[in-house]
Amino acid sequence: MKSDYVRIFLYFLEPAIIGVVIIMGITIVIRVFKNFINRNRQIDKTTDDSLRKLEKNKIITALIIVINIIFGLLFPFGLMVAMISPMTFDAPGSNKNFYNWIFFYATFSFPIVILVAIITSLIFLFILKSYKMAIIFSLLPMLNIIIVIFTVLLNSKL
Image (tube, rainbow, N blue to C red; front, side, top):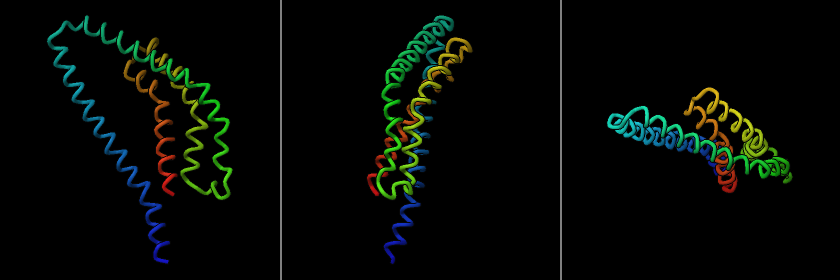
């Protein structure tokens, strides 16, 4: 009886721990990104601003286009994964597993997220000239991939 309480406690504690780890990872990434921005500001002070912007925009544009091409090539694979994602619930009782539902939604929405990411990142890149938003939207399918990896790892522990 006591082990049931421990298992229930761990079942609810595990997602909280994972959430804390994800938040800690995000804060580390933000800190590294701030340091990167500070270094770039120092470089901008020493170089000609207009040439620097032109070169940076070309690099960012090329990076976003490469990311979109990679995810565009993953689109057919994403369609196949979305078609077989309902098989997650083939095992008896698997529809009661929380991680299976997260896995299902992440894999089922992957092709849609790819299309939305490619279209919106190109709109932000070429029409609105917002490079930060273009990068953010071009990397949006990575969120699905990370969620799938975490749910597979967490579900394998159960």
